Image 1 (cartoon, rainbow, N blue to C red):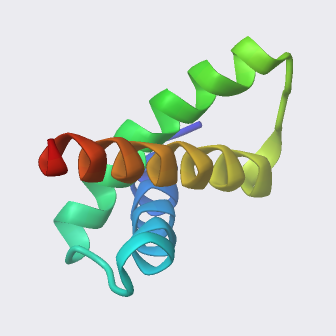
Image 2: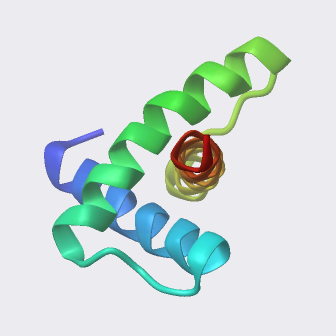
Image 3: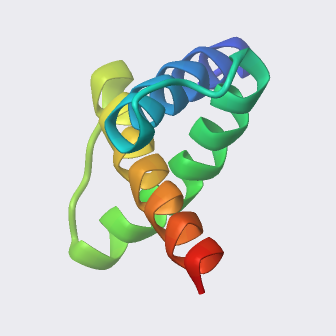
Length: 80
């Protein structure tokens, strides 16, 4: 997957996760950052669970799930 695809998937995943977790996105750079870190986390979690997702939609789902988990972890750490 190319660099541009990573940015697009990261931006979309970060925006979706931001809307799920807090009601809004984080701006274009924040969405991309959250989405890319979420993609790494989601890929790790999917591997642990024995799941595999391919293609653009699969990558978007993986990144979104990872981004939601990332935002959830951040919210718990901030409250502590």
